[in-house]
Length: 261
Image 1 (cartoon, rainbow, N blue to C red):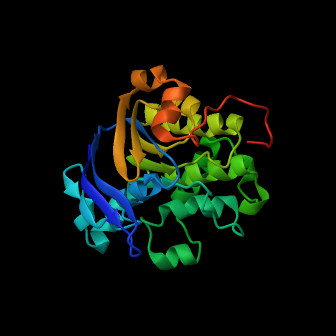
Image 2 (cartoon, helix red, strand yellow):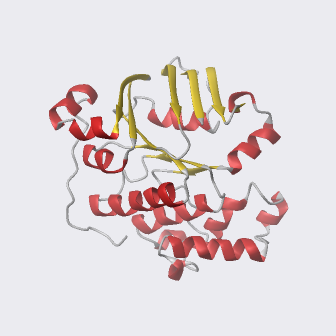
Image 3 (tube, rainbow, N blue to C red):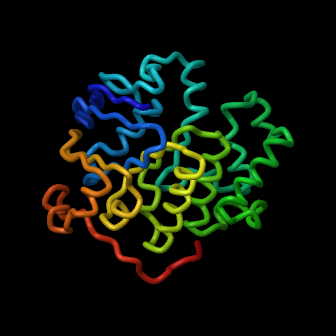
């Protein structure tokens, strides 16, 4: 179980990104976080794995406090927390296989990764991860030769290399068209349902939230303003959604494919 207790983040310029946020996530949930840009979604996800240090509060995972973890202990936590980014966060000049192998950095010695000397079992695991997301034929291509949808698949394969218990996905489909969005979220749903990986995912669009979330929390100005089950969010109309989360919140319908997945 993941427990967020009184989590607050105030940036150096005085911006209050999170204000005493409290919620729990059961193992195996697909929790979607919604809210306007600037509502605190990204900060919240990054506080969970300490890419950003919270100002106050606690992040308790399986009874251990991540917020107080020393570097060696934090490295141990991060091994089991995969992160998927909106802009993919790949090394563009490296090939796909090398990018996927970087998901094992928490398990190997630093010099090993610098020399790209990963064990053969890790290379085999990387190819299996690429097969799982359907792009094994792209393994030797540079990351910047791939489409956006393919790059996000690489990001998912990289997260799989950590053998994660939890995945944090920060608006993973915001830069993709609706068809590709469903493809990428379908992979996350498969990992959630088949591998029992807990997923925390921030999304903007109502159709996607209704389709994939098992539970939803909504943020506004760093505070939780909505909590709902899958059934609750499926009953929410566009008008209600926009009333709570603003005019930026749009319903997505599946449109024509603009690029290859």
